[in-house]
Amino acid sequence: MRVALVVPGSVDATSGGFAYDRALLEELRAAGDEARVVSVPWRRYPLGVVDALSTPPLGDADVVLADELAHPALLRLDADA
Image (cartoon, rainbow, N blue to C red; front, side, top):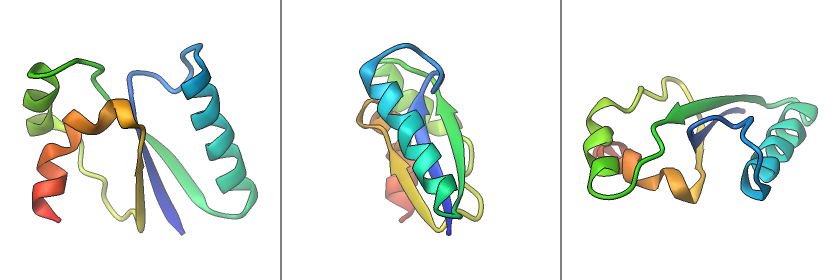
């Protein structure tokens, strides 16, 4: 399965949430899934919504997992679904 994990900023940042994201990536890869990180700008409303216009395409991902803090940048993708 091809998984895209959308995170605000860098998944290497030091915080509990990003530690969880890194652990999730490790588990997915250990299970044989192709997991990649899609980084979006970490900004609050309304600027995060404006960033949705430039969110990188998620390509051939079978599943998209999004860190809750990244959701403003996914507005365009939600509308296309």
